[in-house]
Image 1 (cartoon, rainbow, N blue to C red):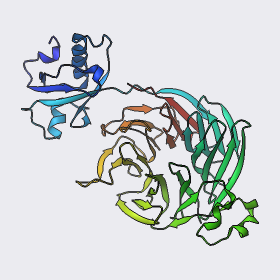
Image 2 (image 1 turned 90 degrees about the vertical axis):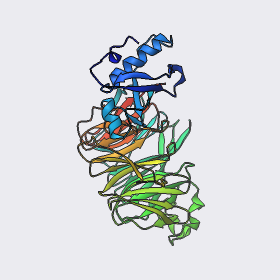
Image 3 (image 1 turned 90 degrees about the horizontal axis):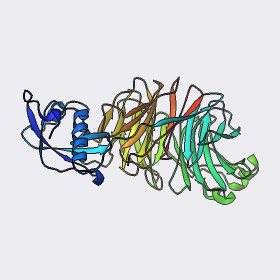
Image 4 (image 1 turned 60 degrees about the vertical axis):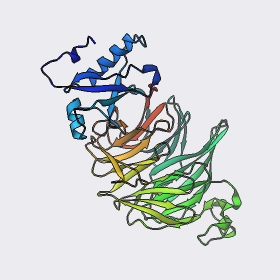
Length: 427
């Protein structure tokens, strides 16, 4: 080995073995002696040398290094001492190709604060403090502005999207959620149902995987379940006491009432996400997360926190939750964990309230966060001490972010803009 990092005789040495799951970059796995003071950039030089010696690549490739399932962000000796690993043993160092930096794309200008974003394919849905909903293309073209609410729109979600038409929902501080039908070819939108039943403003809406049900969370502390179907007869069996016949005389038959109302939180619900077809997880200002059974209507689990929660998201890939909180931290929870704390990691580099968190839809380790410090950050769950990248551009508080389209990171904020970053897969 000609590398300078193996030749420093004055520094204590230890042995490492490189391993990787990315087979095209596999190097010989014999133990190597390295100084205990090496950092990631030194290991990067070493792996690239080994790749060239093995004729696997002639290009310089940027790698990140994992020891005990966490990225190396300090010197080797600091990292292993923190984790109680002996310098006497051969330490396995896993290397993965570094995620490429996201590239800034478009900036979508609105007339007021952007409080909600949702992406499906090439379509971007935004909700605004001027009571409007907007549809944009991922290339930045403005398709529609949709009036209808009488207070700020706090949450939006797609219900179904195909080439010809789409349906989506908007939830507002005017105490209603509206289900909309969009004819894409004629670019016209109809209000299909106005969902009434909350007694205070709505903060969050989530649609389940098959698009047949949605859940809303409100300042009235209630979680409500609604049908999203456009059938006129759907409401006949709803359980909140008003017949379809009575309702058909008002709002031109468009009023919909909830299928179920669930009580338990003591303050406003801030986030609602379906973790499977019948299970909902909510976050609240009352410092708790709750897991609900939407069929039985009961609470399955209550998870206490130490500050108000402002948002949460669930990853079906890792089956874990991330939360945004008033203490400026993001936490990763594994509600099913049977050993130790269910808080598996805390991510700590935002300097103000974290308002929004969203998992990648294709990578179990990656997620976005948006905060009142004007920053959007891209994280890897294996690197709690530092984000991978800061996505700069917002000039005021960030209220919402979304990563449903794997190629687009989208965020909205109090600078009246939506920022779009393009991401490339590292593989």
